[in-house]
Length: 139
Image 1 (cartoon, helix red, strand yellow):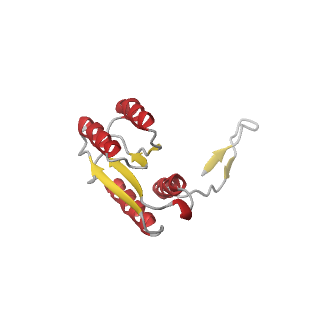
Image 2 (cartoon, one colour):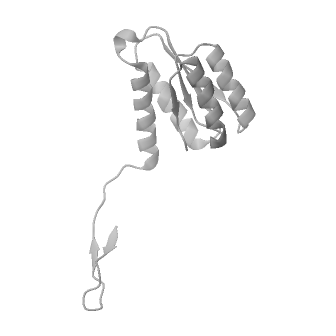
Image 3 (cartoon, helix red, strand yellow):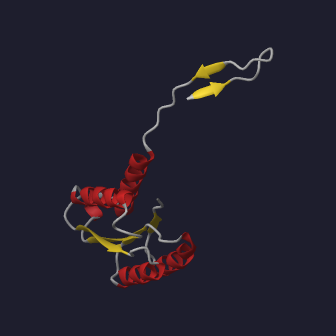
């Protein structure tokens, strides 16, 4: 990344600084996996943990990678951890209904990739009322 220093005698001096950072997608995948692991707690408390994952659309490339990564992470955990994925197909009303259904199924945690952030207040209200931990993942 090239940075320009303040002008010296009317000239700008260009310096080069190398900044190391992971690609954004890998960072988000790692964060989501970490959030999943933290929500589920220690190995001793993982008997029959159900996590509902409400995604805005399955056919989105990044969300496909996310879903696969989450599935891999869940498989690496002790038996009894299950993820239930639902696809809203870019329909906000469908996603709200799906979240309500997951809450009625008494999932232990929710991970939501919202179709529209305007609906997050309603989804949050439902999850909080049910006492279910909730993590939002945006694209």
